Amino acid sequence: MKQKRTEKTEDSQKPKKSELEELRETIEGLQKEKDELFAKLQRVSADYANFQKRAPKQITDTISYEKEKIIKTLLPTLDNFEHTVQNAHSAENVDVLVKGIRIIYDQMLDILKSHGVEQIKALDEKFDPALHEAMMQKAEPEKADNIVLEEFQKGYKLNSRVIRPSKVIVNKLTEDGKQKTEDGGQKTEDGRQKTDDGRQKTDDGRQKTDDGGQNIEDGTEIE
Image (tube, rainbow, N blue to C red; front, side, top):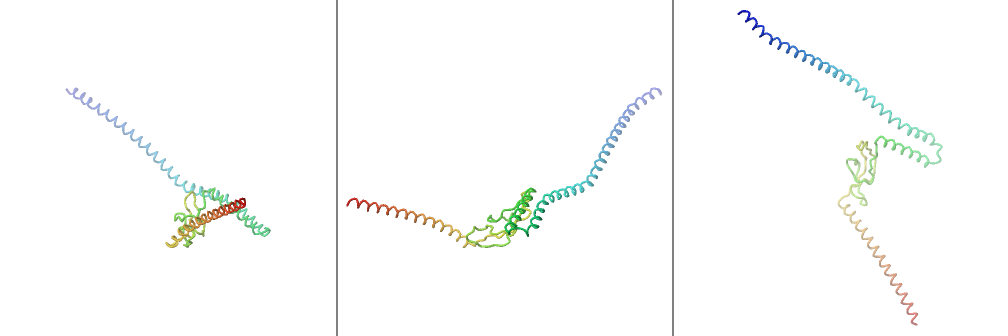
């Protein structure tokens, strides 16, 4: 009997050992997976720390490179301006000097355009608060209302974004001024109509004169 009980106990312990081995293997697998994830986390943390160290230097280097690039494009214009100043005393007249300065000015605009900078049109354009900054207002009845009359300072856009609005004088008409402008336009049309009517009367008068001359010639023939 005792032998049978011992065999049963050994048989009951076998599954328990098998379960323990499975659990041990599972724990070892989880431990290995944890170690791998922790190693990856350490690598990512190290890479991020290195990136934080490199990023400011990369940004600084990029800005310095762009500055250098812009300055290099400006140097030829500066050279031309220097030559113009040096030769100013030997210029034949003021017009020659002004022409040289104008060439430098156009060259400067071309350089700005190559960097995405363009001037904002303002003179004789309709006032746009997104593009123009009104410094003064005037009333000129012969011009349309809300039109830019003068430009104090040119405005510029960088890649279609306004970096400096144009400083301008805007035409602001009162209601009487607007009415006069409209009446002036109507009078101009009436004047044109009267001129056309006068031309028509002149043509009619010439026709009558021609007819009178024809009648006189006819009367001469009758005699």
